[in-house]
Image 1 (cartoon, rainbow, N blue to C red):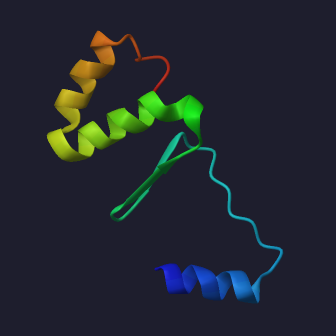
Image 2 (tube, helix red, strand yellow; image 1 turned 135 degrees about the vertical axis):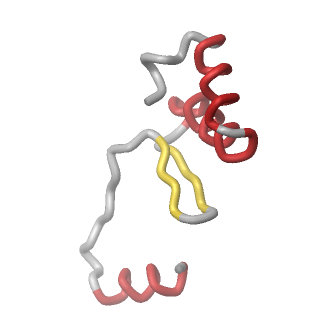
Length: 69
């Protein structure tokens, strides 16, 4: 995947790919927008490793329902 992105970057020098999502997953790669989204990013990791139900429990306990989508 990385080689593909490097090739795209070489072909389309002015191309910028930007996603408005707080957390983005692509296969085994997860990333977020920056330090301000650390809690949402952490919840995404919990969902991936422990399941969506556990992440939802933590989200509710931390009052993050309206912050993290």
